[in-house]
Length: 326
Image (cartoon, rainbow, N blue to C red; front, side):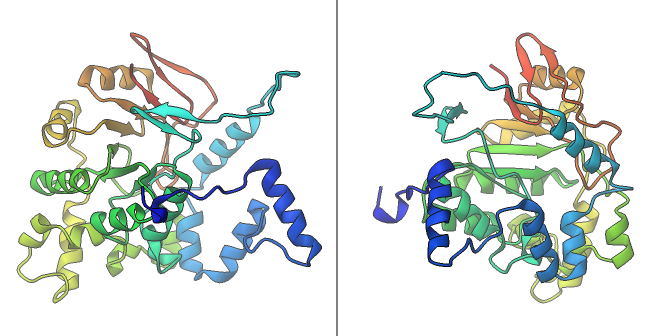
């Protein structure tokens, strides 16, 4: 591996604390706020109000967001003593790769509304830590550009998140583009077949995709471009209208999973599974893993209640983690 692709040893835990305190001796302090609430406050000060609300808000009365946070706060860790923790190992193995920690950067679309470098910056940050980065279908930079930029930092895992739309040829094209670009897993979002009633966004009258933001993967796709009379650069409004007509596909069913398997060799992960019966169906359909999640941008009848969900035949769905079927 070249010098540019070697991961720098970033201090963590106590070493990071010592680094910050040493900085303080000279009057310095972290450039990024340490408390999460202060970081959120700084973002609110910098971002346009509609951009901040798009990122921070949720659907309906945001009950699902609050319930998820409260459920997380209820979890407790009971420490065991005198266990020799001089050397800690947080690494895990997932899909045949050893990861430094059980953490990945989940798919977040339309990042250009918060920073001009958008997904490229996020992917490079994940690569610098050796953690998987999941690129959203609704990214602000094309699949290939993000992959190339991250690869200049390190050969860390990259996954592609798919919003499965109405046009099969377009879906196949995006899936195949991701595999060719080195994305090693396909995360299929199941729970966004329609937009939620997002009060903050409606109050602003703001959906960034309608401005042509967050749809770079469509504008750069040869199948999508072939459906247009004029390229997006010449007639962006027609391209945006086409995107809106193709984005979601509420008619999908379990029998359609085979279509994805015919177009990719990488592991397929279903995102949005909340029921043990659906986890079992996923196993029967031949998928490789599920992610237990409910979308903050769509009102869900389910909240994470901290319960473990057994899917049968040895398959387990872990709380809010990717549970692989073995």
